[in-house]
Image (cartoon, rainbow, N blue to C red; front, side, top):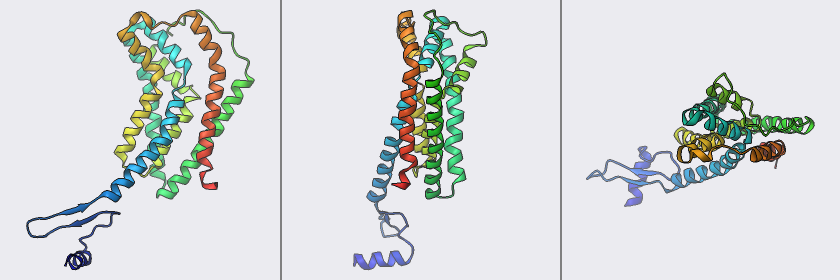
Length: 259
């Protein structure tokens, strides 16, 4: 009898075209039976795949000793308000670029297949940018590091934060990759936005950690001349490693369709 009932509902359009979803409506007593296990499992699996794709890149993109030193300098010289303004300058750049990247790919590609292909091409270009920047770092003689504390520029800490992030050629390509991968993902837009917010918070860690330290331990926010020298000396090669590792991740994704 149940088989006949389901057949009648199917003929009348009562079974909706979602995988794993059967809905029976209009029965006496307003009985509604909904089975959503299949579609829920698909969404969870997709969310997990996207997380494994973007979170490692977000962590790698957060490697920015220069931003950390600048943020520490601002917090030490200008206090918490200055640190927050510097953080806001960094965040503005990421919000604009991330929003444009996540929206542009989703708007220009007609279907999931086209978005996946476009995403791989974008990652290939970003990988080449990272490799080119790594080569430039290797070939450019390093400037003699200074042990003197940096001074806050006269143009203001907000503008310093904006310029500092705009010229961060290790972080930006990786962050753009994160955003465009979210734009190409099959997840609902609200989930992609949540992922992008989490990724942005991770990438901004070098800017907000000094502000947080100043909030709870103001006397610990400054960077000693010895540590400033060590960080300056290691920044160049650490950035080269970050570029190479990031380029490897991006090329792996870019060549996924060829394997």
